Amino acid sequence: MKTTTPLTRSREDYLKAIHTLGHERAATVTELARALEVSAPSVTNMLARLSRENLVSLGHRGSAQLTAEGEREALRMVRRHRILETFLVQVLGLDWSEVHEDAEVLEHHVSERVLDAIDRHMQHPTEDPHGHPIPDRRGRLPRRRLDPLTGLPAGACAVVREIRDGDRRRMTRWKQAGLVPGAEVRVADADEHDGMFEIEVAGRRHVLTSQGLDGVFVERVREGRAS
Amino acid sequence: MKTTTPLTRSREDYLKAIHTLGHERAATVTELARALEVSAPSVTNMLARLSRENLVSLGHRGSAQLTAEGEREALRMVRRHRILETFLVQVLGLDWSEVHEDAEVLEHHVSERVLDAIDRHMQHPTEDPHGHPIPDRRGRLPRRRLDPLTGLPAGACAVVREIRDGDRRRMTRWKQAGLVPGAEVRVADADEHDGMFEIEVAGRRHVLTSQGLDGVFVERVREGRAS
DNA sequence: GACCGGAGTTAGCCGTAGATAACAACCGAC
DNA sequence: GTCGGTTGTTATCTACGGCTAACTCCGGTC
Image 1 (tube, each protein chain N blue to C red):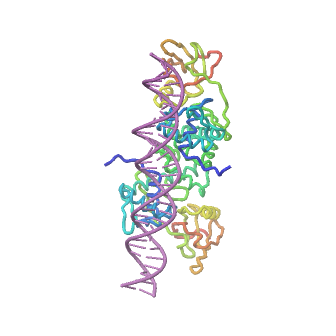
Image 2 (image 1 turned 135 degrees about the horizontal axis):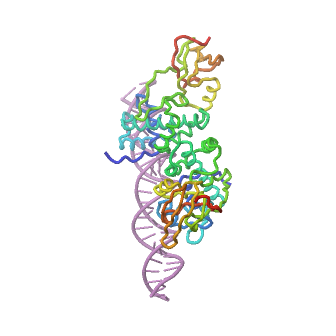
């Protein structure tokens, strides 16, 4: 085993992107280029390096899958990112819709020591402000079964569990509507034809398109407590 | 005025080094090479760039002095560094003898927004854990007149004000001896010939060489309160 | 005033990680 | 089965910020 050189920022970004894109499946060059905002040749190039370094294994038509080691590194980054986001919101009082970019930078530069101190300071949180579970030090992540809010039938009740990082404006809108992790929602009306969605959060009604709700994940609840 | 590209990490390091080396005078290539742990040609090279960008002005034999703009940037980095060190110690509970390296990295990567939040969280501290004053947002720094502890005559009393970042082992030793900002010291004996120094801190006596005390700065106090 | 040594510079190289342009390979449609 | 568009690759270039080797330049000493 060679002396492990610390990963560069770029590598860490690629590994994380492959991880989030490739849940169970492999990530293609084009997907990665879009996700990382680089050109396709740059991706091919970097994938070749990561493959040489045994962090990814290349599949059909250049698609990439993480090796065990790559997966470990990716989860390490996910952990760092989520701890930092939680910190920025809980301790520094920043807004959860705007901390993503900062965490994105800091996750690459905070030392293990400082990260641990931050984690300790917050008493080892298990969820970030968007509701995502934080992997433990060994990279283990509780597997949950969540449904996209837009998949629920009219009348269903659920608790919001995760807001998957998307566009900031959308997140702000959701937040204003009360769609934050932990909130109870009732689907008042779901029209499959035109994609209109009427939901009730904390007693208030909101009408949104199902596109506009893409990224909100919930856990269904049996009985409807909201009216 | 051209659209200001943000400085790179390297440039920020050079500016800071020139600032700390060149108190009133210019910094030479060799000094910078040593301080930044790079080769002399690298320094010449970077100084040429910084000069082109109007951040430093070159003097006799390549020596560098900060321009007004360079000075502003350097003080910006000093401010960031000190705020971060204070944060690491006060909020995260890390040890003041070991936070330097972390602050050194983070000062380049923390966004203005996060830095402000940190500053706010600590209620705008004016001194870092080593006693150094923190420049305000406009880069102003209270000018103080401090004396090196080793410059005091036998019998003199003083309050420790600054510990200038040196070697970690030395800092730890000083800390164990009680030589921290705010501590009162009495010089029990100062032998100019052999450089032996006997000091009294918090009632305990310590014998050190004047070399071993280089970096401790104090403010003299008239009457000796310690016995 | 010649010479030596240290300080600085010049020339040319390396690795990282991007980019574009041009080519190849594959897939689906017809 | 051929064609067109999508997808990926190759070749080559760029910028940054390092490096070494080999020079020049300057300040003193003898």
